Length: 332
Image 1 (tube, rainbow, N blue to C red):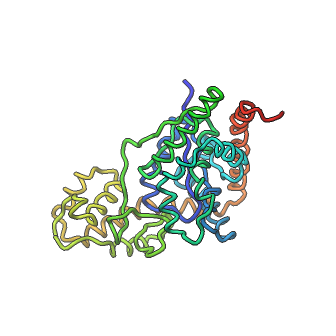
Image 2 (cartoon, one colour):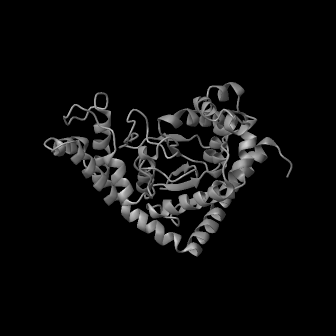
Image 3 (cartoon, helix red, strand yellow):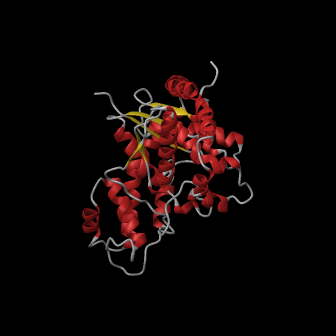
C-alpha cells in the first residue's frame, strides 16, 4: 500500500523553541516512518516581515541543518527550501485568482500580524494563506499537521482546492488535518498565560531555544514564574506556571502528567521542580545541539542535501503544476 503524503513547514526567522520541538518537530520525526513526508523551510513566507539578508540566509541554513540534527532523515524525506522550488510562487499566483476577497478578509492571522507590523502591512501578508495553500496542494498532500492557529488556513486551502476541482475536474487532492495523538501546549516561562514563541522580542528568558547551551537553559528555568500557593497540583487555570513546568518535564522525560505531579508532590519547593525540569530539558536537547555542531562542520554534506532535495521537490511539483496549467488552458 502506497504511503500517504504529509506536508509541513516552518519559517526561517529564528532558532526554533522548545515549544516548536515538542509541538511539531518531535511529531515529524515519528511520522516520517509511516508517510512520504515533505518538510519545508518556508522562506518565502518569512519575507512578509523585513529580513536582514545575511542573518536571514544564515538562519534558513541553520533551520534546515537543525531539522537533520533533530532526527529528520533527508534521504527518506524531502527537506528543502521553499524558494528553491519556483512552482510554489507560480501556483500561488494562479490560486490567488480562485480565492475570494471575503475569504482573505476573515483570516484572523492577517489581523493579528497587521497589528504587530503596522509599518509594513503588505499584500504578501494579506495573501499569505494562498501561498500556504499552494505549498500544500502542489504535492497532492493528503495530510497536514496543524495546530489550533493554522486550522483556519487549512480550511481555506480545502475550499480553494474544491472550488478549482469543481470547475476543472479532480486536479487537487483535498488535504485533511493531521492532529497528533499526543500534543502539548508549551507556555512562556515568565508569562504562562501565553504560548512560548521563537519570535519572542520582549524577553528571551521566556523561551528555551533549541540551541541554548545548558547553563542558559538552567538559568531560564530557575527564573520561571510559579506562584505563592506552595502546593503541587496540575491546574493550568489556578497554577499556570507550575503546570507549565510539569508539562515540560513530562514531555522531556516521556512520562504522564499524573506521574510527574506525583513525583513532585513531596518536593522541597518550587525551586527543586524548576531545577529538575531544567535538567530534564538539558538532557533531551544536548545531543541535538552537539549533532547540529557536527553537521555545521561539514558544509559540503549540507550543500549536497540542499541541492538534491531541491531537485526532488522540483520534480514532484512539476506534475501538479502542469496539470493545473493544462486545465486552465495556458498555451503549450
